[in-house]
Length: 398
Image 1 (tube, rainbow, N blue to C red):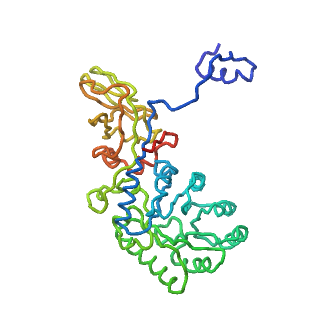
Image 2 (cartoon, rainbow, N blue to C red):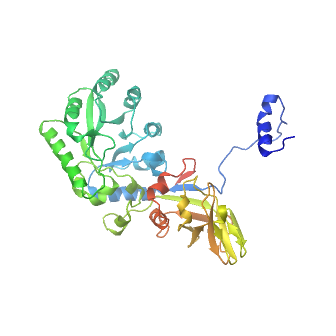
């Protein structure tokens, strides 16, 4: 008789099909909810507002708030609800179409730019919900048809490729497309945009191309809407390119996209996103004991370890076990062994200074445990830390 684990699992899954009756439950099953030990994300609304004020002070321009990729891990609707009332925020930009729809469903009323690709069949839904598509192909006829159906012009932003080679109409071919769109009663060009390569030697040439193109068009009477080129990187590096509007992403969340920016007085950014969990287990290892897959951590002395219920499936990089540290109480402890899908292990030291249930902060706004600190300590990226946070993690706006 087969008695393997796989056999029993297969037999159990087939039970309903075989007509085997399950015993009726006499108790009501409680609604499923998150465990109090599950990791969670905190979004600090006051710090979000502070960062917007810093960006506005730096740029003196309207802000197109980029909240793509689930609001850089914060939750796209969470961030938008905090920023929507702020006069400095002119609108929002996302990449995924479903995020744009989510914002409208959440009651966000300000302009929304969808910077991702879309099919012409999806254009009526975008336009009916006043979501502006980013365009860079000859789409005028489709815009005509949708405009006629809605009986109003369709607002768009035109993307020009000045050298990043990703998307956008090539700058050499942009003028005819923009003239065609601007000449249609069905179209309102609400913005014209480009993206820097962030190569210090090439960025000036990109800006020259963009300004030459837009200046010629404006001289011919073409209305381009707000011209915008600057991301969070550009807020530090390219004040000459602020133009009519700025387009920050990571800076909104109070995180410096490059370590060198943290050392400048340009903006005082305060991290508005934190990742936390509670210590699930504390144990002492004896000399010769090990922890982690392949015995990645071995000790030659008595030592206390704490297990945290947060792993790479939640967004903590595997590399965090190679230099990363977390805060428990007021002390920082190294992540050791290996980061598995749902767990990580922290070395506490010769004494049991933490207890099951203590809050462990993977990153927050305090010096030493900021996202930039964790990323630098384990050769990771702040983008990996935030954008890879699992969408299922509970998010709490504080």
